[in-house]
Length: 154
Image 1: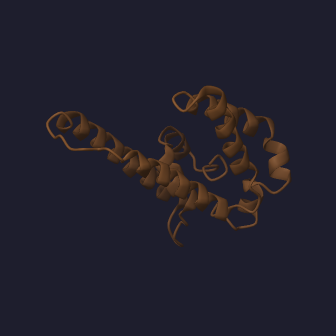
Image 2 (image 1 turned 180 degrees about the vertical axis):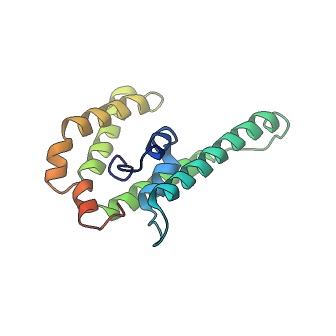
């Protein structure tokens, strides 16, 4: 997202702050309509998502204790969401170095730390891998190359 948010002035600071899974997925995959300012488009998506999170969390905190229903099986929804996001990003990129790094970091952390504690180590490993290998991935045709070739909305 650093490349997509480059040259957006003061808006990029809010865009970095408001970045979460859903905002990333939307801003990464959506094409900015012709004639629409790219910065304001990303800013609007991020702000609306931020407001949805805030409103949903507030209402959930207030009404959550008053409304009772069976949530058994809902964890599947989050798994399905992440699989869809992964496949969408996979189909958009020419080279899959970042996806493969994330997949293997997840597997290694899952085996090493178990299902209850693997998420944070996975994020640290992914951050380290992408930081260490950013230049080689970009040279080999990672996301930056796709952006410059116009296959991904800049």
